[in-house]
Structures are given as C-alpha cells and as structure tokens.
Length: 283
Image 1 (spheres, helix red, strand yellow):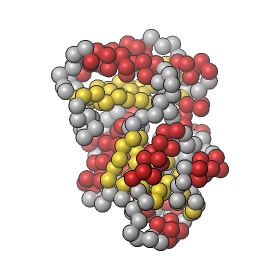
Image 2 (tube, helix red, strand yellow):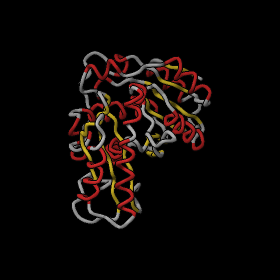
Image 3 (cartoon, one colour):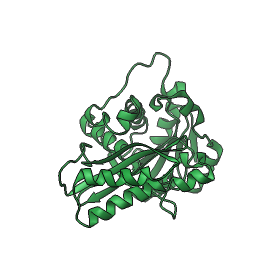
C-alpha cells in the first residue's frame, strides 16, 4: 500500500497505469465499519482504490470540535492495508491549503437548510476539499455514505454543476446491531449516553412506521420524531426534517418519497441520522 503525503506523490502513483480505473473513498480518519464497507464497494467496482485521510479544518465551525476529532492514523492505515487499498493520501494542512490559499467552492440553495443552517460555512468546507480530492485523484467513482445524506446531495449537485467526470456512488448507512448509526463521534459517548443515543434510530423508525401505515404528511412525520426525542432526558433536539430527498425542502403535504433526518445532542455529542422512504428516493 502506497502512503503519500504530497499531491505530486498521489499523482505519480495514480498515473503509473493510466488505463486502470480508480475508486476514491474520502475520509477524515477514525475509520469504522461504515468506511470499510465503502472501501470494499470501491474494490469491487474499480481496478485500484484510493483513500484520503484528512481532518478538514475549514468544515468545522468550532475550534474545539476540530481539536477533539479523533485521530488514529496508524490504526487507520493498518485497517486499509488489510482491505487491499492501493493508495492513501494523508496530507498535512498546508499541502491542501498552502499559504495564500483563497479559492473556495460553494453550493448555494441546498446548503442553507438542515446541517447547513446549523453549521454555517460547513458545506463550503466540504465542497472545497472534495473538489480538491477529485482534482488530485481524478477517480472514475467516488464513494460516500448515506448517513451523511445532505453531504451526498450537496456533492452530487457540485458534480452536476461543475461537470466533474466521475460517478458518485452512495453506500447504505452501516449500523450497530441495536440500530445506532456508526460514527466516529460514537466513541465520545459515555455508557448512559450510548444507550440514550438510540433515540435517533427510534425516532426515525417511528416515523417510518406511520409512513408504512399510509401517513404521507410531512408535518405528522416531523411531529412523530420530535415526540420521541423529547421523551429522552439525555437528548436535546437540534432539528428534525421530513424533506424532499433532492431539493431538501421540507414537505408539508403528502409526498411519495421523503428523506427523514435529524440532529440531536446526546450529552455534549452531536449525532445525525436519516432514513430514505419511498420509491426513487435514491435517484
């Protein structure tokens, strides 16, 4: 496995055989089974697999969150080598954002709601670093997890708008046996908080249950999730949403597809989760 620090090293490795197809899995490290599932997906569909490990400072709103983000590079590299990854880019911050850096990529409307409203500037950081990763690796396909549903929608919009020559592939959310979505932040939860964190999945599945019984009204879906979260003493709701999966606009009338999503503080840890419901929701 080739571990590169610089853009030049990545490009030298990537273009050793120009006829090989590459799949890219962008990450911030602290890898879990969700990341590794994307790596396996990429391995199945491409000749070569590249992974980036970079804790992107410009997508964090608070310095404390950036400093607290888990970093386990040696462990991550061992996991990726075991999965047969060909190339890992682990750049320093000044390699990605050299002195004098002043160019950013901003997707407009769909970044103004949900995570974008809660974390101003977050998605400008995401789209800027992802655009740079696409430019450095030039993959045929890039792999993202459905757990970050708005990120998927924003990256797809950027790819359409800017004409990137690659396919965005979305892997399903990987969960613990009890339903908790895998996240690098889960390790920050204490035992009581870990149990309380199940309220996110319980809220989503409660809304899914009424959807399956024929309730298609966005307001009813949101109220169902809100009530479940409100009953958990250790949970504090940031937002709940029942929105169109493409535009991310909140649904107020009946619809045949919906993205249920929510953000919840459990103790001091902020967690997100979502479910897609209805035919064509992934299109």
